[in-house]
Length: 467
Image (cartoon, rainbow, N blue to C red; front, top):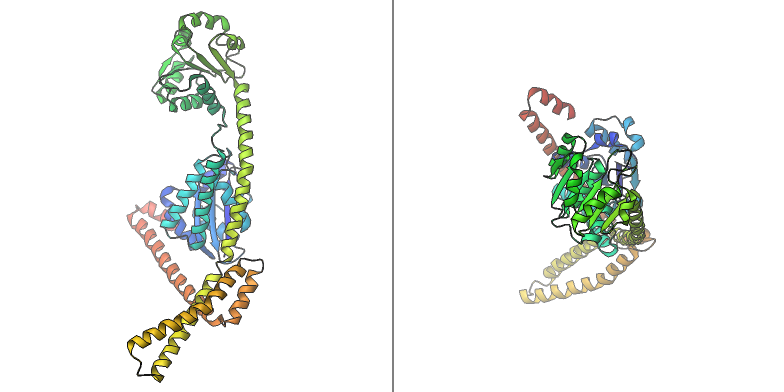
């Protein structure tokens, strides 16, 4: 079998394209079943996040990209001409490497993020429940998830924050240690301020005060954090009680000067004041950073911290790349032994048949043997057969994992005359797969019919059109 992944992500397609190819959570089981019924597809897993939609399939032939494009076109109702230039298709080694990189966070917009690990794991577990995975993907996806967990634990790639808002929170921890019972004053109601206060709030900040020229906008942001909205004329009063100040306005000059804050500091009685200036041009007078117990950081300070953390993540990524190479080699070694199992099974079946035929012949020629004697003979002759098979089986397993493993397997098959038993095995497997495919197709039709019966007339037409 061959492994293929086809998808779109934040690198290859803008959000205006990606949003057209989002699987609704409730539709995923049916989508998996239909994908499994696509020509050549033997196993499948669908990974869908806000930044990517990917179809992982194990197929019995190459190329199969045409069939995958057909599935995407039919399921989403979008002509392939509108997405073909954004679609990437990786096969075999590249597809396996891509899965390991995605699961470990190396292919994410924010390198090393851990959320994708859970998303891949959930996608795999759903595919398992829907019985669209088999031996190949059960092994591959478990290996990818396990490796990603180990990579995050051993390298700590996700520990260093790599966004400005997270960096601000990190700096504050150095000053306060904990944000428990700390009061946050937001000046302005910009998006960056909102993100920063969200992280502060999640880390234990107790009270949020939003000061803005427009009270309604301040109220809108304050409501998100069960905070208090206020106007600029109350700024100095709020500054006296705040522990953390986040400023992000569009003002042309400084919103807070050194002279203004100096008067407040006397009444704060040496309590630390952590100030974050995210505005460009700056809102907070740079001289504030020279004052006692005032810790001032601007956008450049925060970006510098982010860059240093990104560098740490890049170093960790190099370690993870090595881990991926090792895991890929291990998976390749395992796949090389997959073809051995049917051959060994055929050999053992043939040996067991010969043994039974020999025992039948023995009983006809020696009809006076009692049960005990037959039992002893059966046990001894079976032991001889097993011992004769042991070394050949061990050797073919070893040879199959080597460079010319396919040739060795072919020669082994010819030496033991296993061509016909293997062909019969294949015919049986194909018949079973055909029955399973027909049963799955019947289930899909029944589900669609159920939707049609339950739908209103107009909706029924939509369902029929999709079918």
